[in-house]
Amino acid sequence: MFTQRPFRGILAAPHSPFHPDGSLDLTAVQQQAGNLLQHRISGVFLNGTTGESHSLTLAERQALAQRWCEIAPGTGLRVVIHVGSNCLADARTMARHAEQLGATAIAAIAPSYFKPRSVSDLVDCAVAIASAAPATPFYLYDIPSMTGLHLSMPDFLEQARDRIPTLAGLKYSNPDLLAYQHCVNADGGRWDVPWGSDEGLLAALVLGGRSAVGSTYNFAAPIYHRLLEAFGRGDLETARIEQFHSAQVVQSLVRYGYMGASKAVMRHLGVPVGPVRLPLSNPTPDQETALIDELGRIGFFDWIRAA
Image 1 (tube, helix red, strand yellow):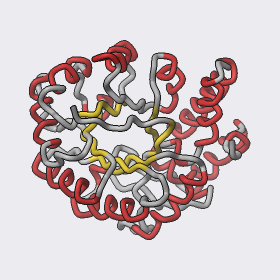
Image 2 (tube, rainbow, N blue to C red):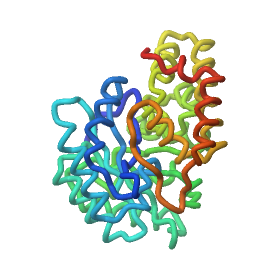
Image 3 (cartoon, rainbow, N blue to C red):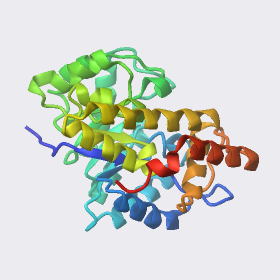
């Protein structure tokens, strides 16, 4: 049986860094990596939702993956490369490239324009992608809020386990906690199921989650380290407080347009990653000022002092 060392702790989903004109800025990756290492991040999940993957060209996604894989050796950062695409041929190309780069793992969302109609169809898509990287662990990335695809993940694991030798688990960005429990416990706990909704991390931990992938870990990691440490020592009161801090931060970001606002926060903290690309929107200068003021009022800049 193919084995994958399960993820533990928190992995950041880095922003794809752009120059002010919107072109890809590979020179920014070194500073991004340094910031994550400073905040005890154990790995990165590249070219996913936070990375605006569907707004990048195939060449850009490969260039960004290559740059992170050049930096990661010797740092301890584990690199997961998201290769999902509406074009399965492109997904296979990126999967092969990720394996050549020595990625820790690959992940893929389901095609989301022409959608798989059944779990069986979804497994067929996953088989096509994973088989292009036969020595690299594969995670299906379930994020129905973005794909519009609502298929059973427990059923996926059951049907895929004998068809995808490299299957390691799921990157689970789905609010369905009932299904999450079944995934975490499927096949005696065999599968690695990193949790993907930062504002609900504590719930996932209570139900057996062991790791998480998220966007706010780029700039708010101390909150989550304290949450994990409190949970580990059985201090649920403190863990709840830290989880609510996360919820308040997410709510503020959503108010100003989550993706553009999160990049504005990175810039304010001295790790500029540029604007977002259309069709996403960036906050205006006045909105950015209001966002930073709001985060200050709720205590964010105190919360992110090193844990």
